[in-house]
Length: 348
Picture 1 (cartoon, helix red, strand yellow):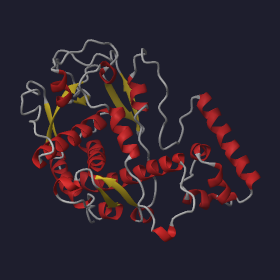
Picture 2 (tube, one colour):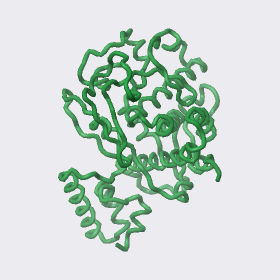
Picture 3 (cartoon, helix red, strand yellow):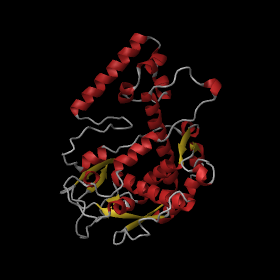
Picture 4 (cartoon, helix red, strand yellow):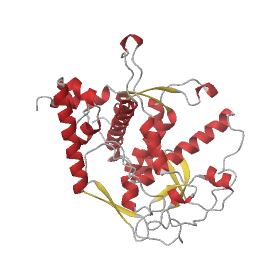
């Protein structure tokens, strides 16, 4: 196909991506409007047939399916609903990528990918929840130090007493064990099975494998005045249990990584559509996650997991966006260059 290179340049590398693109984008590649319509229609037909046959799609982000609120979620449904964008861009492409974001979602991205290497036994839903816990603990502590929040932390007030902790990016976060939720990796794809996946809280019976975890939201527990009990069969994310939701963490990532605004004299006469902006942010997230994975992978075979965890925060600080000091910089945005992340990789 003579237009393959043009399609690759716009990251339209599969029928799923083409089907979700806008016609005007295809028109710029194929020039002929009728041909662009035919390509779009063909891609949609292929995607629809693939979905009906149950085949796996190659989309970077699997769209969440509407699930009745009274239907229990199986482990496979949970993991499918939190899949993140992927990128196979070459290093030259990654080095040219600059993102516009604030610091909190960058911590979330750093933590989520770090846990893939330091806690590989945890499913993606757990990694998202645990990384969000790091973000929240760090933000709460920072807000108090700046005087934005006059209160004390729920941890300081004793709300985490009795709950286990894990250390992530140098922060201790309280966790809840997801008893009965088991998963394994087969051929690079997550496969999850559970005899009783919705029973989140159980007795502390030891198993052959460390159970999946939720990051525990102590501030929510404090606000609700506890206690920490499970009174539903719907699962933690629907039960109101004070955990950091993997779905919410994923949504935060998907919307947080824009491209810098072009100079005034280079701005397009027409603003991009909402769908185009959303797709761009998802692609940017895929680029960021790929760069972070390359960073951690370069060190994972020479560093113990604890040391890799300790270094992660310093790496984040080295590339985080520059903002004003103090209260004025709270929530401020700046640029993150993926070339700086790639330069942190182990040499040799």
